[in-house]
Length: 323
Image 1 (tube, rainbow, N blue to C red):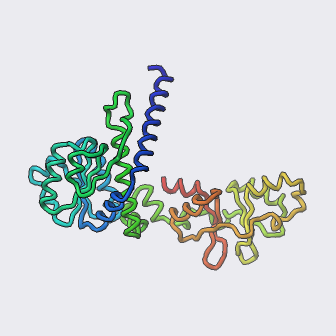
Image 2: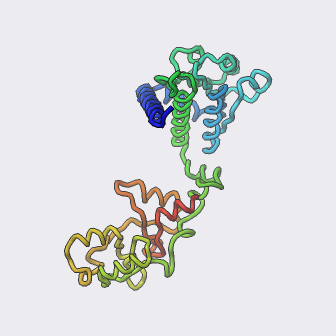
Image 3: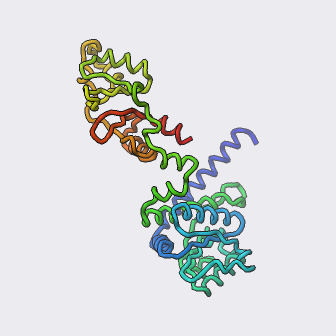
């Protein structure tokens, strides 16, 4: 294949995945809501699937476990050879199968219902044997797999994973306390860093804070911005209370005004009520404040409970700390 043919093949695969996602969005309805509520009420969530569907089932179980929902993966073959005992009445079995006809999974579902275990099936086709034997049958439809021969499990596993993830997100939201649960279950890695570390651990503080008084000129601000390279200046009063900030963006806008930077005061061009964060806030919460807005903020002042500026922090500092 030529490089152009490789690009075209990938592009056509993406188009098929987009079409499948549209189908999934259109068919989400009452059954999906019923499935979420059933998982919330369950004693334990057991997931199962064979082959590639098994990997999706394992991922769903792991996601639920991370938000303190009792869950485990059960291999359908092992279940038929003694491991069925891990399930009990009041549990929910979530069964994954692309075709909805996988013999081992269908057999497991029949046994689960004998044990009064509720069954949610996730398949990629409508009207399958697995669907008809389930209490709730969800479909993650696809137009085709991503390869030209419609054989390699790709779009089907992606769709099933998305549907499973949507269930997990809704369950976590309904139960509440998701951030605290993730903080406890992820003490290491980027999630742990984001939730366990606080802004005062990484902020630029003390003499590293770019600062000026309100009577300084814009020319002074340009000099400080160039020497500190943090993209912000905290304009403070004598008691270190934050009166405002001036940023690289403010200076760029001032440059187009035609006014004299040696005459105009910082107090006349600064942002008087800037977005701030507390030193005790987690990296995650600070990042949310900076990014979840119409215009994202690259750097913010850190202010304590009585309004004194104790530091500045950049998005870059937070991302680097998480890594």
